Length: 283
Figure 1 (cartoon, one colour):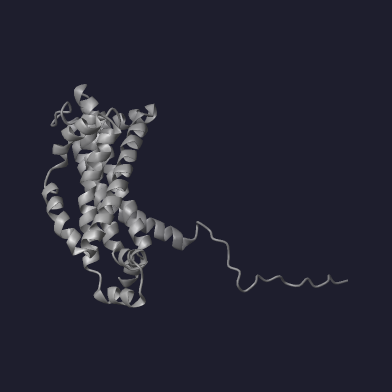
Figure 2: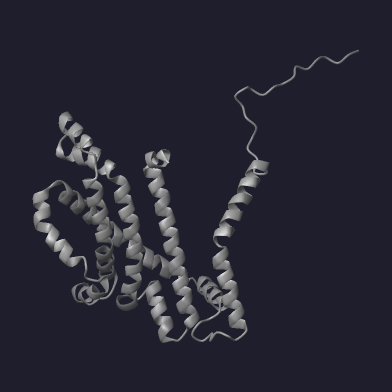
């Protein structure tokens, strides 16, 4: 007696095999990406190794230039206590608010001055007069106007981030091809649609670059402001460590500033690529 034939079950033609993280191609790409990252960081790793070695040999005064291991220990201690995250968040929140204010003002004024020469005729001298003044010189003024705290920091950050955002917006508007403007006028677009559908999208790469630069400038400004006019944040942490002669904490704060600034710039580059795919497709 023979067994009945069981029809062979085949997967639908459009059904693909489930993704497996152990696929050789995925592993190869992961190893390649890791190798590239290590290659790019090779100089940094070598410098850290030499720095640590010279510190342990006593060739460097660790009281004024602490070893990487001591700095790392200080960072871990701050992380375990929770104070480092609160200081990072305090600085980041001030930067985001200040850069948001700068973005609104910078994009608005940059657009107006680029499209309306009469407005530029009156406002350009004032902007060019204020531009060369260092934000450090504005800190005492900010304290007089707003007192110690977040408002002073917002003012300093917005002031520092405003000029790169304004300049890039103005330049991007000026470089829009005239055929776009002529087409918009031919279609009879109103003023708001003219800006929102033609001018700002065409100038978006320059605007985003300005915001990215402004974010970096704002990150530097917040540290300067917190050194003098704040009671929290990474700048305040560095100032407190200086007073207490905790040099490793000063360097720890500097390294965290660099890491956070690097991460913000990287995220802004990702945002630029996501919002301007036509530029990526052209390369």
